Every structure is written in structure tokens, then in C-alpha cells.
Image (cartoon, rainbow, N blue to C red; front, top):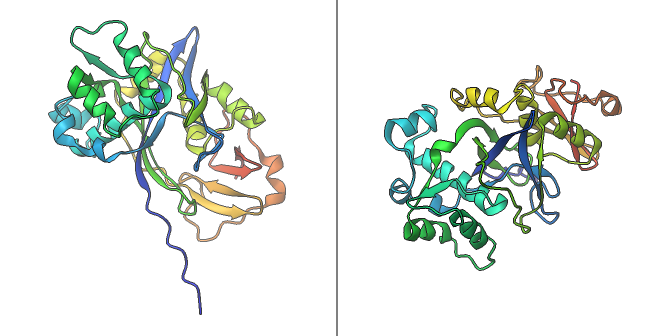
Length: 302
């Protein structure tokens, strides 16, 4: 009996937040190392993020506890594409995941004291938190989530051949000057601020292994010399088309073909595995293919 081809899993909705800051003369972003036992991108460096929880979709609740609404919400966060409900759900998830994984809280409250945010961060360290802990905290203590701090950056869909798949909106926000990042030591075990070019170089050497979307995002951010330059882009950026790479299995690894590759739409793409090691590209060099080999995702020439 012929075996039916496996049906790929549907991608789960997820949200990611790129934290950016100006450090002396450098633009830097914050990366977190995923736990070695994680079921997705174990040991790789990513931006804070995760799948949407059912409570993130409670629009009737969250619309009363966020700082944007109506046409402004649709224009700024929806990019003229997402509904208000989706914009709020993905935005709340990005803020929640950044708090849980990186210890940074995009929120404010009336008569806020300098220690209030630190108190919330200490709460996220508890292992017995209920799934609705943040919603309860926001309601009981009068917090307002700062959706206005978020800007659309990119939209990623995990390749079909991967076991776990996500439909992820990547937001970007400026790091609050009065807070500091701290990994949760459960889902994430290490964090670092890095200049985009430095991060790409460290990925090539294997010192800071990057996930493919993180790799592409750092490549995009090389174009910005400072946080001021990046802010100008943030104010006008829209979601654009989803980035949906193709994954081609190889002996001992795989090749990811990005949508801007000239051969992306071809039914069959021939990969000369013997030449890949010599085709590795230096940091900053434009690329459309990412070679997964020996636990590392690295750009290669087409």
C-alpha cells in the first residue's frame, strides 16, 4: 500500500520582539539563547518571543488595557492589513513574551514608582504562575500595555518541512532606558547585546549560533548606522509580504531558500553540496540561501 505524504503541521501564531538600543557609537539588539532542551532552535540565539496564548486573543479585555485603539491602532500596528483584534493579540503576546523571557516590561501605571517594574519582573521568575497571571496583574494593579512602543518589522512563516511551524510577526521596539534585560533561565539561558555585524560574524564562527530569521534580521539591520536611523524606518515600516523560505533536505543538513532567491519558484533546485563550504559568505554580504550544517545556519552563495 502506498504511503500518503505527511501533512505538514499548521503554523501556530507567534510574536517576536526585536529590542534595539544605542550603545555609545553602535546600534545594538538583544539576543537570547534558547535552552539546550528546547523543542525548537535549541541552543540558538533568537529575539524574545513565543506562541500566542488563548488569553492574548481576549480583545474585549485587552482593548481596555492598552494605549492604542481605533484608527491609530489599525494604521500603526496593523499596517493597514491586520484587524484591530489581531494587532492587539500579537502585540500583547510580544510584550508578554518579552517580559517572561527577557525581563523587560512595556507598560505604565498611574503614580508608578521606580520599583514597580522590578516587582513585576520578580513575579515572572516564579515557577507557579497561572496562565492568566499577567491579565490579572494588569487588571488588579492598573497597568496599561504600551502598544505604541511597538513597530512592525517582518512577517515569517516556518518552512513546510520543519517539524514545528510558526506564523510569526516580528515587532521592533527601543529598549527602555530605565530597564535592563535578564534571561528567565528556563526557556532562555543567556542573553547579550550585540551590534548586527558583530552578531553575524559570531554566527559564522559558531560562537553565537543564530536562528534563520535572526540571521536575516541582523542582515537587514546592518543598513542602519544608529538608533536614530532605525527610528526613522520604524515610523513608516509596514508588514509587507510574509517571508516563507523553502527547505531542501541535504545529507547531514538542509538548505533554506529565501523568497528573493532567483530559483525560489523552480520545482527542483540543484544544490552542489561539495561546493557549499567554499561558498560561505562574510558578514554583510547579501544572501538568499542559508545552509544548515553541523548545528549552524550560515549564508552561502547561490
